[in-house]
Image (cartoon, rainbow, N blue to C red; front, side, top):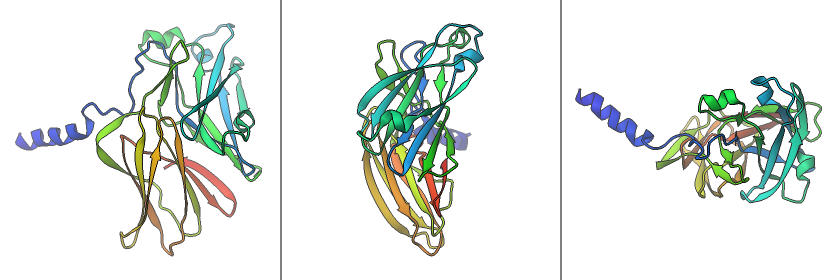
Length: 265
């Protein structure tokens, strides 16, 4: 009995009032992940847009998605509305929308203009966590990755609410991928919370367990930091991310011989 109580106390330290994401305070608020955009002479970003409401309601009412773009510091840049095509997928060229005037990286969100009544009656929210894709150096194929988190909600007045959760204590997130020699890795970590987060990226040797490097980054609210890590060690290494984020799960760009793979580690 005592052991069970101690176990509950230990679990409470890491879980009490520390959700992965918060619920929006506004009813029927559409939700989106904070997707990463990259735009440069080497990088292009695309997004697969689907009319999600039509999966729940069969009607001909016009619908659209509001794309809201942010720079790497989380500063809101602009909004663009895209009309949805019922029961069809559209591939949006995000890089062309952003252009080259706002830096080489940032985030964007996609908010649907209508929440189906079936979702509202369940007390739930319509969340966009679809597929983004990336092209590196004009390669013939793109690498796709799915949305990861309910990161931001939009109110009827266009105001935004960041939904990411934080922890009382600093946590460690161990990347679920072993980093191999001769490969370049770029880790994109988005801050979905309402405050600046201090993030430490640690590279640790797999054979010896020694810390090879430790890089500290302050990530603004709604912003992103992209950490480039060429693995020069003769043996494999692993990445540990320390922060107050409940789950500091990065977007991993893996480049080997100019071939790209993108995934959540």
